[in-house]
Length: 395
Image (tube, rainbow, N blue to C red; front, side, top):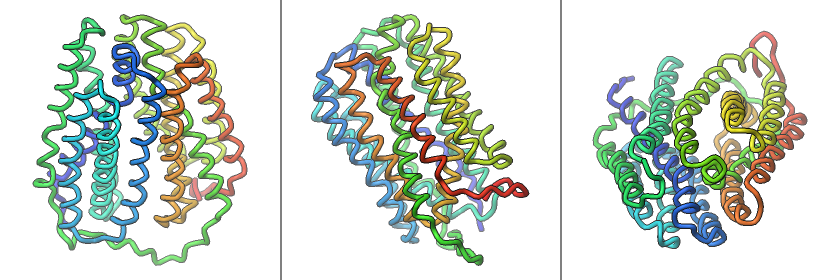
């Protein structure tokens, strides 16, 4: 097994790019659409629905790359998608006045980034023969995600003095495009050989898959990601409620919240293996749901404090959800992707729904509805069949 250290840069940068695009789409474009362009939200919601349908390509590609072992084919896939990612981002970010063009190329961008993400993940898995390399590869991907989430917020805070200056927005968009431009070269730097593929055939007999638990997990994931209902209304609501100065402060504090969320993931990984995952998931979901119902009705200081606590709790929840999905699926790709599809379904339904509802009801109520979804997820969690081994700390 060869360890290609330059691949670490690729892992970091791909996740950096994916997260930069995500932040632009889900943090800054809502403000641009709602407060600058003042678009028709019903039309935007309709376009979002069809654009986010592209997410369904992810489980399909995941199954394909899991069976396709040809390294050249994977590299071609990554090369095409990196080009598609850059071009589609450039087109939709500079044509936001035309919602139809935005929607078409947003869908293409989502498809390209999803395929590239899955292909890179597969290379990481195949070239990680031991726990040390797995942890190291995971570290670089997470660092890339954190850096990608922080970068646009820092740039926004530095260059914006007037939130309603159109030229500054275009400057901000141009910087975003420049930051992902090197993605065109990543396929030239990925180093891997056919013999590096790890054959992970288990010698131990696996237990039968519990279909009841799989169905329950599908419901949990759908309800958990129901919080995406406030994805687009949140930032415009903060701007309208607290003013431009506090919104700029919120963008800066997002950097801190991203770091706090990362610490929550680390904490979740540390404590979850020592506790009953099911019980921990129930407690954290209750805490998160209650705080999400309360937070929109608080003052600015309390809002930031509670939001910070929620980021820690969210990190713990995500770690345990992924662990439960792996355990319930018995590491069978098809079952894992079936469950993951319900998270995608939540994205497709709730992001456009939140955009649509935001023109008819108060955003505070939309955020509170997301909290109710979190609380409802506790019911199927309670009925999941999960064995807790006190000696090993997990099933």
